[in-house]
Amino acid sequence: LQSKIKPQNPSTKNTFIAFALTFRIMVNTSTSFMSVDSSIVKDTIRSAPFFAVKQIALSSIDFDKLTREFYKLSEVVRFAVSGCLGTAIFYLLERFFYGNLKKNMEVLPKICVTNMDGLSYITAYIIQIIPQHLLNAFLVYGKDTISTREKYMKTLIGCYST
Image (cartoon, rainbow, N blue to C red; front, side):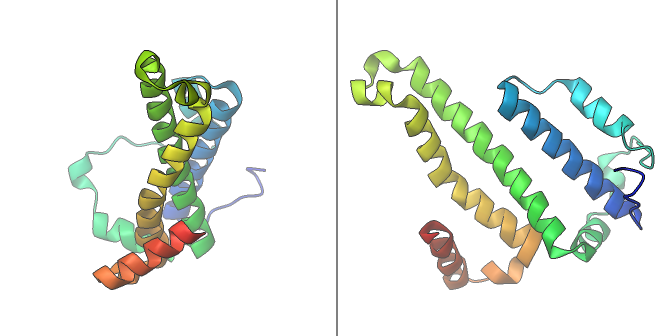
């Protein structure tokens, strides 16, 4: 697969690695329900021979150029990146709510205790819509889609209605 995928520019290479890394972390955590091992990160980077890892200072990054290069990627790729980030946020929220419910089992009503999985899932899902909406606006469709309060509320209501 990697020999057939030949990214044309460095930003595509970086996006490919970020996407592959996110996907491998999601697959690992969803199938084994374990924390992510640093070996997954190393294996993913090693498995992409065309990608050279450099350590760079955060202050040396030109974020304007990075943004311009990111928006040169197709909308499908940007949507996939946004979706992967949103899924990671959802996963963290769900684990947070489940952990808090489990800690407080003795003070919760019995219906909450017996339905902790569903309760943590639906709570995380409802809350996760907001960051996913913002990720889609900033990474996929552009800030002008939420530039005014009316546009923001209209598109957010659209997300909740789906």
